Every structure is written in structure tokens, then in C-alpha cells.
Length: 439
Image (cartoon, rainbow, N blue to C red):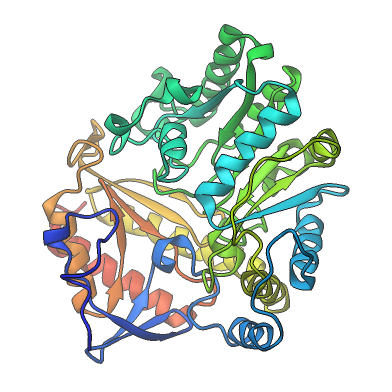
């Protein structure tokens, strides 16, 4: 069997250190490796395989579409594209809106910025985003992201991006560990940034409503406050739902937890849109934003935007979420997982905080000292001991994701309840082994 080690350039790693196993198949929450091992996927790979691996209905939809029509550009119509757009607008409650299909999350975010600027008549309008955020790895998206790993590669100001501090209550952002106070002050920071530059010069605020690799879950008052602050100033709010959408946080889209008080002007999607069976992203525009663009030329788009095969996969994915009640299942199992993690926190001094729990997404933050909240290592470096824990879990058939001092849990929404329980029990045991200072 061919190996990628010497021929493929891999992302987000040092090439000489890449030594991942080869995946040859999958079913449900499990991956099948070339060496015969079966691995339980506790991160949905990159928080994208929400439907698990090789979901039969999605695979069949791709097969049927391939037999009928593989490709037309977006200059031509395609039935699965039309049906998927209507389904997304219905799930989002964006009556009268429109959907622009992209290849992935990064170009969805870039296009959302384009649309916000064009619709507002501010072609060079500033975009307010957060430090310690992630919106993609293209140059524009690196500028949008508050990512310490790529900051040296790009000048955010050159892309019209303004960063504000994140609502990181656990580590005392804005001088407070109180979530409500931190959330309020974080909203004030966004408002102050808009006011400083002048609302007439700011085209949009782009934020992640919940799940993301940064590990910061905003306080409950943050998103509604953000919506109110941007609405008052007539600045568009873009919700980056690339990771948090499609049941990951217990709703179709994470902002829906707040009802109409959280509805953004635009939102971006990818990952769970097809359950990662095929590449596809989208920008969803409210009726008001769409109306402003109705009679304007859009100078954007890539050859494969709205690819019929991908749209067929997306339509089948949405039907699977609905028919199998996976949004509700994520909410129920996520609550159970969060309770189990809080119980672990009571046993392991290394667990400083547990966040999330609105769906099958949770963050465990590890600390060297719980009293002072001192991290095990400076962000974004991952401690060697945590890497050893992840490797040990893999040797026992469970794949865990970590970043910095964080363990990120985001299993497929179809995960078997016993598999979830076994994975959490393994994590409990490994924490005791690698970080033996208990409570």
C-alpha cells in the first residue's frame, strides 16, 4: 500500500514528524485503519464528521447524483443546489434570504466579508473579530483569525481587520472570572472598537458563536449582547458556524439557542453541512442583506462552488440529521458527557475548567495549579504529558483531539452510548495515570 510520508505535504504539522496511520474505511463513530485497528473517533476528525463515517444515506445520495449529473458550474442551475439552499434557509429561519455555496469554511468566511462590505456600501470597511479565534488558513482568513500560530505571516490591518479580546472568563479576561461580567465587558469591547473607528467605517463583526478549536465558550450573555450592540450601530453580524453548526452545540445552528435575539445577518457553514462526506461550504444571507445585493454584480465565486455532488451530499445530510433526530440526540448526550466531565474535574486536580455541554462538544482545560489557574504550558504549545496521554488513548483504540492545554471532545452525533461511556472512562483512567495528583 502506498504511503504518504515522503510524497504528500501535510497541513498543520512539521513534515518530518508526520507519522499518522492510513485510514481505509469507517462506520459510525469508528475509523478502520490499514493495520487492522478500529479506532473510536472522539473529535469527528476536525469537528466535521457529525454524521459519523460513511453514513449510508449520504453515500447513496452521492452515488445517485454521480449517475445523473456530476458537474455544472453555478452559471447553470442544478436541482440538488436549489433544494439544499431552500432546506438551509428553512432550518435557519432566514425567510427571503439567499445561500451562496463555497468549497469550504475559509472561502465561506471570505465571501461573507465581501458580501457584508458590498451590501453596506463600505468596500474597505473594517471587520471586527476576536483574538484567539480561527476562521481559516487563507491569507484573508489568517488576518481574520486571532491565531498566535499564524500571526507573523499576515498583517490584519492590511486586510482591514480589527481584533478585540475574547470573553475568556476562566482566565480572567477583562479583569473578571465572573462569566456574566466578562461577557458584558467583551461586548463593550466590540462596541468600543466600532465606535472608535466609526460605525460608518465598519462593515461587520465576525465571531464564532460557540464551538471552535480556540476552546473558549463565551458566557451566555455574550452573543445576545453582541447582536444588540451591532444592530444598534447598524453593523452586520456574521456568525461563523463552520464548527458549531449542524447539531454540534445542540441546535441546527449555535446562535439559535438565543432565539431571534441571536439571529445574525449572515452566517457561514461547512464541515457538518455534508458531514464531511464531500467538500462544501456556504454563506447564508438574511433577506435584508440579500435584497441589497439583488441588483448588483457579484464579482466572486470559484469553479466548483455549489458542486452538484456536494449539494446532493448536503441535502442527504440535512435529511439524516432530521430523520434520525440527531440534533436532539446531541443535546441529550452532550448534557450527559458534560456531567461526566464535571465529575472527573472533582477527581483530577489537573482539570481547571470544563466548558461547553450544549451539545456533543466540550472543552477540558488543564492547569498546573488550579488555585492560580496557571496553565501547563504557554498557549498554543501542547504539553508533552498531554501528547503522551493522547498517544496512549490511541494505542487503546480511541482518538482524542488536543490543542495547547485543552482536550477537545466532539464525537460524531451518531456515537453509541456505550462507546461514549467507555471513551470517557478511558480518559478518566489516563488522567489519573499521566497527572497523578488527585483531589
